Image (cartoon, rainbow, N blue to C red):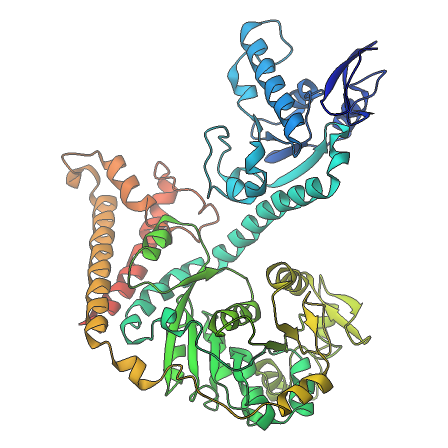
Length: 583
């Protein structure tokens, strides 16, 4: 047997090829090196649009069989977390590619097309696998297609090298799988609501000059912050702690929680508005937000900001990586961008952390249960609860049992030991909360029921004692009229920039409309009809982002162009309305 060192990977000759020894163990069988990986590949069912995550490929044994089984639109991405093994895998892959080019008798495809679908993630880029798959980070060594090519990612352990770093391999695999899954979940959302989001952006642009700059509100809160969702645990909190004590904090409510807080006579300092549909108007019945500053997403319903007598500000949820949204993000007038967190509750907590003066300011959370009890879905006096009361009759009870028995719902034991229900979406929000906020200093879960949030819990008794010890202070001037009216010149400048942007978009849309209606009769002298259409449409994804195939701009398709044409008039109407408001 060949001598080897524990410190460096070494080839070991066996009766049926070469194995690899490293750290006092064999990474392949010392009798039949490729037997295990061949069996693993035989058991794989590889559907079209699959990304194979080749974990610790080392000598790339089994790659030939894998490529023979791989559908044409599937790819292999090698991941190696040990630098020495990574160097071996890189050299071996280059050798295989070179041999393939030089030998027509190789079992691999004689063309580069097969090996063009095999890549090794650079060692220093392992932690950026999400950015690479999503296209945010481009590498010369890897030319993976757009993420829309993939429907799934399948991890495949190609050697025992995975045993040296099992947790890291599992984590990288989950990240890759979640990135692809999240992309398609987002596509479903955009198909349903993408056009509404885009139209709301154009409608809200006219409001921006009158809004407070979100950046001017950062780090302004110097007292504890209380964030309320519309879950059932809100009831227990406002029952056990008086409104006087709660109001010692800066109170932030998600839009659906406002009626419940108003009914308990709790002053709401800030309301977080994320919803873009008309249904959210129910949350503002009874002037629940008239004395609050409203933090509205740029994609939210335009009329929401009219419900406050105080002031409002905008933020921009990064709901798409489209070119038009990136262009807007570079404009001085566009509001601060925040990550797409999926839930208004998560967004409220994210904003609360931005508002607090420093990390020593405690932030308490209640009503973010991401679950519900049998017959209930929200706290009392929430819009959903009030709507249920209004629709109750002899044939429809006030209890909403349907929610607990719908598809995807499941029962679990909550934080307080009581049986509750959740579903896939709500459970996903709780997991996202854990991923985003776990370990955040001085962020406390004050809710007594629901799914665990991954942050430190605080009992009602301890919270009450803490609030009672506080003195009544309200030194911040968040959203004061002075702040809103001081920069008239800045406001006029912002309005002018928005007007120019809207005029540019109006001109471009009219040109697209003209080209689609009259074709070559009006084409430019410098560019062909196809080139100009592609240039104009590809950078304005809001015209097709909501199409089922809206992840690509296919200007060669007559069907695609007809659908784009059907959208233009909607956006022209919104732009003209915005220009009229600006004037």
